[in-house]
Length: 317
Image (cartoon, rainbow, N blue to C red):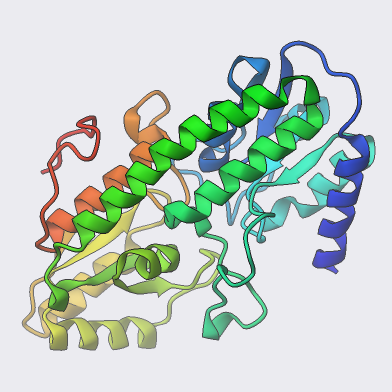
C-alpha cells in the first residue's frame, strides 16, 4: 500500500517537473539534513524552507495545517524517503496530485547500500545520511532533481553539487581517519536508538541502540538488561544521548550498569535525526557529522582535534 502511494508520488512529480517557475522559486524540504543540502545545491535560484527544526524527530512528525499550506504553495518539495517521514506519505501524495514536483533524495541509492535490520524485516533503515557516502548520493540526486525542475540553471546546480561533494569527501576521509584511532576493544557505540548503523558500517564501529530504527518503537526491560550485561562484561566506558530522542532509557542503562559495579559516563550528545541550532556550524550537515565523529572518537579514546575537521565546533567538555 505504502509502496504504491510513493510510486504515485514519484510519477506525479515527473509529470509536474516542467511547469514555469517564479524567480526565485520556492522549495519546501522536510528534515534539516535534506534542507541543508538542497540549499547548498540550489544557491540563489530558490528559497528553501525547512519544516523540521532543531531537535524535531522526523519519525514522529505530523505536519501542521500551516505546514500543509507551505507544502501546497511550494514549487517543489524534497524529502528524505525510505519511510523516515512515514506519517507524511498521504500529504506528499496530496501535493503531487496538485501538480507540485515531489522528490525523495535517497532515490539514487543502490539497494546494495541499504540496510535492513534483522528485527525489522521488510523495513529499510532510513538513516543513510550517517554514512557520508550516502549523503553524497543524495547530493547528486538533488542536483538532478533541481535540474529537472529548472533546466535553465542545470549547469549551476551541477557546479554547486560538485563543489559541495568535495567538502563531503573531506568529511568522509576525516571520519575514517579519526575513528580508526579508537582502540579496537572500545569501538562500540551505544546510543538511544538505532540511527547509527550506516555510521558503524562505514567507519568500523559496532553499534548498539536501545530502541529500534524508529523512535516509535519502545525498548523493554529485557532489552535494557541485555545491554547492561553486555556493557558490564565488555567494560564499555561511555554511551551517548541524542538531541532528538528522550534520554529516559539512557538513564536506566547507566543505573543498571552502576548496580552491577560498572561506571559508564555519558560521552556527549549526538545529532541523529536532527541537526544543531539554526545558524550554527552544528546546524549544517557537515557540522553535524563533524560533531558526531569528533565527539565519539575523543570519548572512546581516539584522537581527534577538539574543534573538529574545520576548527568550527563548539568546544567539547
